[in-house]
Image (tube, rainbow, N blue to C red; front, top):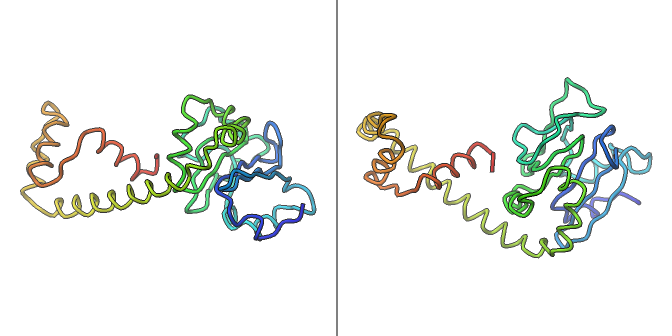
Length: 217
């Protein structure tokens, strides 16, 4: 296989196997938006890591050693063949959603929530071993455009909420009222204050907003 920038143009997700990972160690399996996939070994001379970084911008700058701190599906904490001084780093705009025994499932950020939901109920090793086949078999790739559009709409809504909350936190009366919401009064009291100041939101929506802001969703 010859690596070119064109080969990676439409890659939406990939599985990276560390050199000492269980399974196809030293490999990268890439998924394109049309459901096609290809796999090669970055430990081979003709398709080595340097050439991979030159051709695949989505992986250039990444470091892989155990699970990313914000990986959604992870079970095994083994970093086989790794270096304890290196911490996994994923390129901005991408998100690692599954890790098992040295294998990383990474996708573009705008598709991450869709993949997380799609893999619901699966164990990390099942995602690594069977994830790509499941995506093709169930034609999940056909939903990627809708998933991305929903992601961008949610991002816009989150930005609007963030701006509203920033403005409210400049309001002494709002800050005072929120502080008065004691532990005994609970979340419901806080939600009522938010509603009074023009932000109508449920506890679940607020919780999910917090997860998204923290990069956990």
